[in-house]
Amino acid sequence: MSDNAELANKINNLDSIVFKVINKIVDRADIGFRKYKTNMDRKDLTIIQWIDHSIEEKMDDIIYMEKIKKELIDNNISNITYDNNKDYDFDNDYKNDFTKYLIYMILFMPVYIDLFYKLFIS
Image 1 (cartoon, helix red, strand yellow):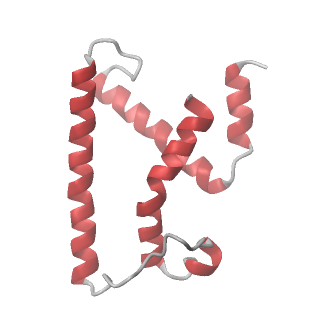
Image 2: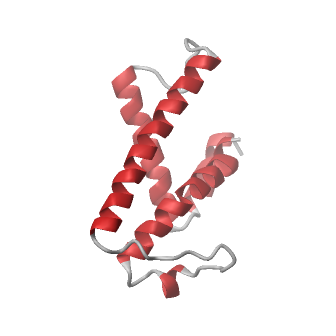
Image 3: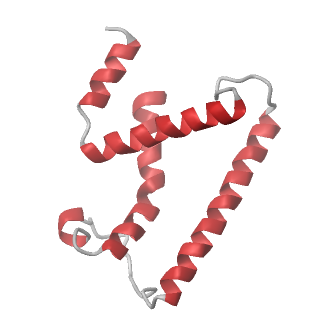
């Protein structure tokens, strides 16, 4: 089986949430290609330039997180706690509480991205 066929098979067998995340990553890559007329296989940047791009992205993320934090505080929902020792169950812990769901996604999105990378990229 070719690498592409194997990847397609893996993607087709994913749950709807992971599938949606993968679609967003693909869409993001397409937007980047249309904007910059190149992709991540490009060879025109030095490692320092790649690090600079990554730092800029992280600074943007900090700004987004500060905005989210401000919204939580302004809406009096900053008292939500998270227990690192608890195994959270989405259906029981978050299904009917959008605020908690949003926080859950913010906390765990890096985990999903890392998992996607390990499964499909590396």
